[in-house]
Picture: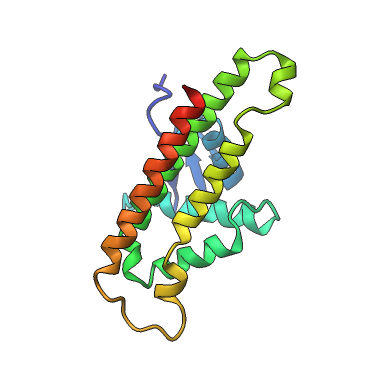
Length: 186
């Protein structure tokens, strides 16, 4: 039996069918999404070439959910992501998104832990809700700061030094969010 910490290996056949190597059966994208929602990592590889196709299929899962009306990503965030591929901001976007999602996961788990320690009446009042709301607003502000200006239509190349300033702004925002989380949970 495979350790659940190991990624589930899915092989894509030439027919584009996806094969779960642990259960020895074919799976759909929805089956893969369910495995991921349950906390398991997956790795999808092309059987013939051995190429890692995981990113391609994860993006396809997201696109399918978004097209079914299960929208998680607001239009302005999607637009800014597209812009980030055509600007110098693309170099900081992956790191920023990874750190932001790590912080989100950590704050969610701390919030759930704190709610478990409260009595039901106190949980109904949702302590920390305002701080969480402020965190979300700061996250979106930090994520989109400067992109609309630096990558909008009619703009020429960035002035070079603004990337460092944007990165420093993002770092300050993240530090402020971490400080707020520490105060909320401490």
